[in-house]
Image (cartoon, rainbow, N blue to C red; front, top):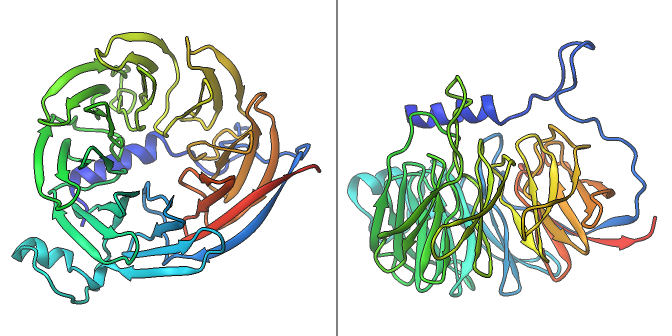
Length: 409
């Protein structure tokens, strides 16, 4: 059962971030864009498609596929984790976490080895991340789980006491999770043993979710639900610096939401962070000093590549900016209100998915929509993953689709 605070967070996101699907009368402005004909310059083609469990349904989730070791790893909310050959989608292995651990009982009696079935969903919500020949994930139940990437066997399981709703950060021999209850916890990547814990005070009302942390140059970078960005020393968890990214402003609690829910992104010595109700800020990585800031509001992860920053904002507008100075190069508002995913880069295009299950390819130099494809699946909610020029997409109903594009009408 969700806690009262979790329910409040869900209401906040639903009220403040979710765009209504339709309009009540012809006199009102539409709540989302109707798709218009495009001058298609690319032709999408499906390479393969496979189903992984029952997906995430209507739940808030940032569960995403990951491509590594020649495989695509994906999961559903209930507990199915599957490894597929990236070239053809053939199953390499599949496990059901409900057959490994009964989450409610384990919390009461303590973790022990053994296999036993559980009717309760694992509520997988954070990850997947593949590194050190291991697949790491987190759950709303407060579990962090490590699976052998080759076989799917359980390597370790640790309870952290709060829901994990974003990707763990993996590197420097550790796994760091950021929980919905305002905790940043470092675990040993080999054993799952806790190394340190940092906790901050969370506001009464916040957007549901927590930003994925990042491990960079001996520091753990994380954005919190108060609108701050910070760096923790990875060896100890002590705070090195903190900087305001989003400032609470407005007359209502919803207007004052300032969460930093998007994952931090870095390029060289510059760190980029964006707040739900704040700004896009470029920071000096070592000191937290502000290099520049621009008025963009987002809770989706940014794409920083080839000297540019690509982002989708809270209104599902898409922007491209220069990394140096944040000067806007183009914007596209033709997909407003369609609950766009975070962007990915695919063969010279910016690729996003929407709530109706459409994929859109935008020219990364101009922002023009050059291609479109309908995958359905009750909508695309997570950023596509691109590997070797193939885009892998996960839909709400658990479908994993591999696509490529051809040039020409």
